[in-house]
Image (cartoon, rainbow, N blue to C red):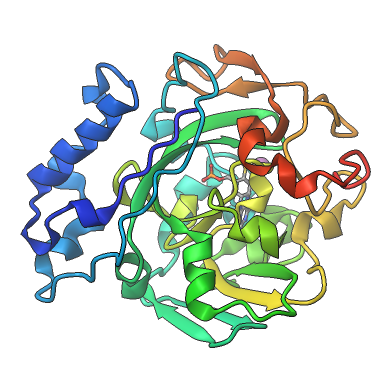
Length: 338
Ligand SMILES: Nc1nc2c(c(=O)[nH]1)N[C@H]1C(S)=C(S)[C@@H](COP(=O)(O)O)O[C@H]1N2
Ligand SMILES: [Mo]
């Protein structure tokens, strides 16, 4: 797994042009070893996410110190092929819009993402409310390529844009009693058809909620994405802001977040509430613990091939990020805490 980190501060603030973004992106793709990456990069005319960089009169604040490169290790020597953007945005799980893989791309355009409010509250030193613009301006954006491994045994390799969850939590200030973080998706049945019909949205309780232990949340891999493929997130992928926890099954990576709350007690989470014997709170990717109804030993990697002509690869403990996160669970029985 190649993970790249690039920081907005390397851009020359508001002087940047779409062409610069384009070239910069090509640079990282080259560094990542994606040869012939030309077909993968967004064309300059689609760099919507970064439009504010040009229009902003006041240059964005620079990081006080340059970000330290994280010691991410490649999963294999050749690196995985990025999943084509068309598949990342048209094969989705977002039950608020329907339970089939095509439902989100067909129905999520009705979602209003601007204006947006995200609050960080509970056991924090200072409650924070972010509006739509804050999501793109307040933190140094970086691109990270992570593999998303769904509990249904398929995976994709996705170039996200966003910032570390830890950056946000540090701004709010974690109070000493805080042990867990919970996340809530927007609840707006008028725009999310699955929230008002069990036939469409399945039998899970809404709003969708997820949670992490505080040390998991502070791990540098835990990421808040506001974009993918160099553009702001399409609604079906969780606009305007969603969590990405690459060492856990995809259902932990909650979409369209409006609320983040720090607490002393372990929060209830949507899939665990609906089927506690199938979906645990931790949900760490683990090839040795099968889902009660299927094996987790391998996965279908969604690449540029046809839907039924995909690469079958071995599933790795913690989805290949063991070096970065295994220490978080060193005293735990991972069969019991699945
Ligand atoms: N609010 C919400 N978040 C969600 C889901 C959902 O149904 N609702 N599905 C989850 C599941 S099961 C997966 S695999 C990922 C899929 O993300 P993607 O569609 O961007 O690939 O989102 C997760 N986040
Ligand atoms: Mo999933």
